Length: 341
Length: 264
Image (cartoon, rainbow over all chains, first blue to last red; front, side):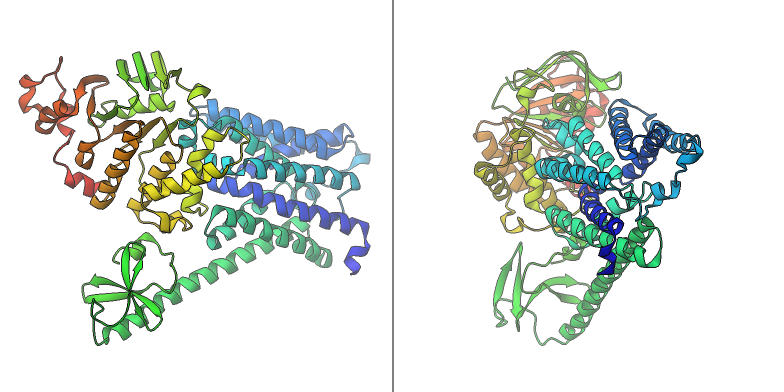
């Protein structure tokens, strides 16, 4: 493929592969913790680090990493200690970060003109060989930590009060998660961009949430989706000459809308089928019972009737007994959907 | 000793809710913590759990000051909420598995015994056939049982439950009473904050009644029943010093089915 002939594209695709894998693996805990915008805030903070790197002529990836991790630790301390001012403290930190970044970058000598857009929204031509090496180390660390501590991060993200009550090290785990987010933000700064990385953390998790049955499944699925949209978005941006970050995020959101529509459609047709069957069953010659001739099947906490290969679950309604389809296997329905069975 | 409070004031920020409380719970006891809303009963157990601040005095749990690492993984907790509400789906096994984590330290991996404890805890609350189902697909009562199983999975020395009967149907209440009887028989100390003893009357033996921020009664469960069901009409007959405040007439013990049904 022509696209692979260029060194910059090889590096960009490698970087997009790593960030696509890692961002959802960290982001899913933020979604669970309802702290989706932490990545966005740390992206702001990282920009000050980038500016310091540019001004001092050191690699901006390194200085951004330091700034973002410091910001992450600070945020967790403010959250743990802070009272009402916590929210305001976060805003000050975040906007201080982006303002500091913009002002410091403007002070850079003319010879070092910096393309701010590339840091904010991603650009495929910017990934250096050193960056790829740094990104590989970050990826290895994040994947290892999520593998080792994933269940604990889930516990703290899911129910912080319970975790504290039973003696899990809540502050330490929250700080680890914030540091992982910071590292992921930096990983994003070449291909996705500091202002868009949060989307790659959140959107694949949001898609996985619609499809998965377990947290583990959601995690694996989110990483897979992140990887696919990240790599394909980077490739597309090569052909369309658009910023890679924006292209990746638009792809992710398109996928999200598609899956949402598909899931909605599935639910709607499910309800329609349900109503259609209800019509058929209204003309049903008999109610199911001990002597209806259809085998009774114990299904969870109730009895269904095996009716020509599918399970009927009786529940009383105003119009008489109504039969729900419970399928051959255990069907997941909302508690409300089961209430009458 | 499972719990020891000496002159303990517990609250939030620097505002005490429970003041100068003394309480000793021996290992293996089964204690009901009763009181009206705002009496300090929930603050009492939150202090023991390290979720409210100990502002003065001493609070010890399982022989250690509260928050000490020595109690890690030995306390089970069922919070006062009805559902498991994560944004991302999780199975019954995953949620209950969390109950085992505090015993494993920061990096310990679950072993066969840990996995078995999770399976046993789910079996104890009668949800074995839902092990791999997303928790969100369960009914409210079943989700409560998942939270109970999460606490049981720790095989705790001290099990603390906040309003476990509120909003739970009769069948789930009976299941819960059976589970708690078995846990108590195994030597676990039980502390149950509740408005309604109901099905638990056979399990809990001692009552601690909080009222207006202090402990107003501490004795046999039966001794807490007469006044708290009748409210202030019998105030002169109260067997306890100080007598209960007017708030106590909200403590429904024997008669409470309407509360059980209306809690959700």
